Amino acid sequence: MSDRIDFLEKLLNAPGPSGFEVNPARVWREEAETFADRVWTDVTGNSIAGLNPEGSPRVMLAGHIDEIGLQVTHIDDAGFLFFDEIGGWDSQVLVGQRVKVLAGPGTIPGVIGKKPIHLLKKEEQAKATKTKDLWVDLGCTSAEEVGDLGVRVGDPMVLDAGLVQLAGDRIASRAIDNRIGAYVVLEALRLLSAEPPQAATMAVATVQEEIAYTGGGARSSAFALEPDVALVVDVTFSTDVPDIEKKELGEHKIGGGPVLSRGSAAHPVVFSRLVEAAEAEGVDFTIQAAPKATRTDADGIHLVRMGVPTGLVSVPNRYMHSPNEVVSLGDLQSTAQLLAAFIRRLGPDTDFTPH
Image (cartoon, rainbow, N blue to C red):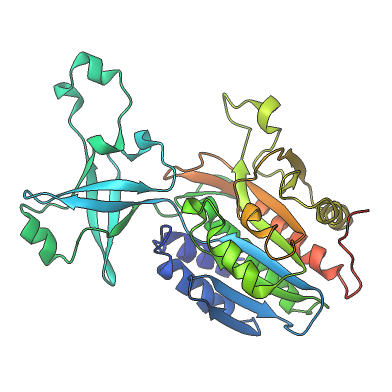
């Protein structure tokens, strides 16, 4: 298992916000090449690993590999960087953070600055900090010095918060949403590679989910792969922390196993077969209602071409869209186990038509 943790840590630590996913995608493909029948990437940046390509039915496993981040919008004469958000941030968590600026082949360290509390007016102290009130300090004294470092407008940034192991089997890191999804679909493919199933199985590390209101890389890859069924792996809110309304979100806890979505983009036959596979394998799970959108890659996949029967399997995650999201390694393992079990139960005659 230690080599799996090493791979997960390498994947999480690789900086790659939406639209700039090349670093983690490269790590993912290098790992996939150790056991998949074929590994490739498309023009959108999605990475695909295939197993038993001539099999039937055709299964797509999708986990998005991008993360939320920041992007340089302006460099002033004094060498300070101003920025906007890539994806959805609570700007309060940005204050005082260290960042890595992706400049060319490397990264440049910086810190996020803000006016000290001592200098804020009383009415300002009561207001939430906005992203426009912040800047990045690289230690430079001029725009020219910033340029000498290779930094320019448009460069992306991530917060400098790598993986740490907490008590038990829990880890904290930035980019858990949803690089662990890309990790899980590849782990499911690894489990299947020991004894390939009847199904042709393609694991996809999709791009641009955090900024893709119309489907991003999930939509384009589903169009190209033409799957008969798709399973999406993402994170969902862990409701075992203070002040979370379970009446709205349900009861899902870290260590409680994967969360199966019902409604919206989640196909009823796929859901039923996921439940059957989980019960047969002894995998604990909970169910989450999705009466409208799932806000995941499932929304971009399930209506591609003539429609793709799609399931959404989520991992409970604490402190989503923060530098220190928290998940259970056991939940990652059981989710990969469930995906593999679902696929092993498929055959050429499997019918997903609702009756």
